[in-house]
Length: 397
Image (cartoon, rainbow, N blue to C red; front, side, top):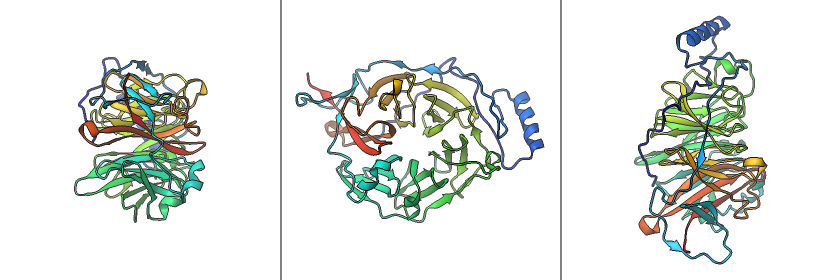
């Protein structure tokens, strides 16, 4: 069960001029020019860019400070004595050990693991974690992450790469899952039966009229009626799509001036905003989808290449391909309310997960109640591929 905390986080002075683009489908050059003039002259906080624009804008990214927390969003786990020499990663309340008995890979999927370049989503209703593995499709982890199986699924999920996904719980029904396939250039929408998915093809929007690359990397639900999709490996636009019927709504935002690779996108219901992971810049950009503007830019430690975020109340996991100075990828825990990094988890450097050079995705997994509650961070890594879990501990001294 996730903890939802109301938290207005738009600190005074945090608003910045956005780096956005707003383009409608297949507009003529004259209409684009007129739109550009209207937007620039009439609404200075929103910038429209032609498809080939290279203009960049200055922004006031706020470096996240590092603080150590002695308390978290729940009581600390029962204190335990760890065997001598047990490695621990993290700081303060946020200390984790390797959970090597969790997330076993099914034997029939093991040959594909080195190529893993995918995503994780958690279904708290059924206590299930789903992993998207290239060439295999969806894999489930159940029974407290101790059992796994390849899902019986529609073949479309096995043909490309399930790169970034989101899950939408629905009372009395299976959750919806939307997933971006960066290899086929499609977004798939289905429930967790993963049969007969609806397919969203290449957008008929002006940035893509010239046939240049479209390679979506992540999706985010905003309620049950809308998705946001980010084209992280293509031309770097992110755009809304209606769920019923599944279709693009006719606008694209961002582009390369916003980020060279807007890799991940996450909806934050507490602030009704989207968190866009600008990977090569090491930034988390808070985007207001109603006002169509950036509201804040938070910077991870210099050199971090952030892939995505996953939320638990005030706390965001921010998995990184690389840490500062090209060190093995960490997973930052960010307190969004305090605008601070409160822990850096290092699966390879601290815990000896040898294949965890580059962390590609990470999710909170919380199971049990009361004294039996356990908190895990589950992650998947890339080049080489892999999957693993870390368990929150309260070390008895």
